[in-house]
Length: 184
Image (cartoon, rainbow, N blue to C red; front, side, top):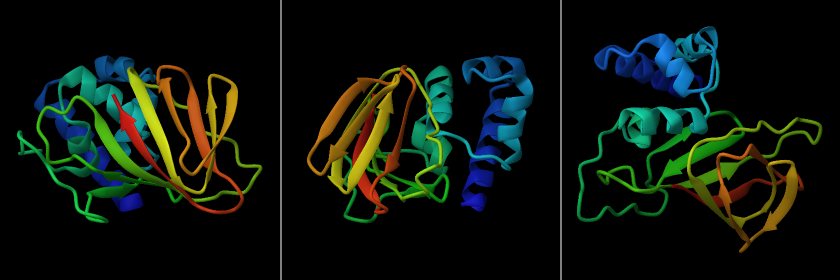
């Protein structure tokens, strides 16, 4: 995990350098202070998908390019075979597998997300990003908080929501949960 976060941080530094983006500007896009943003570029702290999403939308870079480092090439269709999507474990609790990383100009970013259980008392990390999000639980039981509303989703349940609202999740019953997330 630490190595993957360091690689994402290096891509952020490279993006800012290549596009000559002032630190103050990109920090504002991320809704962070300059010191908070610069800490992301060190690779010593987790970088949320919502922060990467904000950067990708603001600067016209594919979200999966920031996450995985690969440039999409396909424009007609892109197939992801079972267990073959490019993946990153942002933290020990979350694994994101891109299901469309190779498609150029995506209107949405679909991910297969695996959330591992954490101790019950662990607080939920809330994030927000522009757009909308769809989640479909494939296995397990998911606790989801959206704008202070608490939901429990089980296998087959789905939710579509305004992702600008603060939201966060955790696996329930000491078991991992797997869900399809589409960020639009």
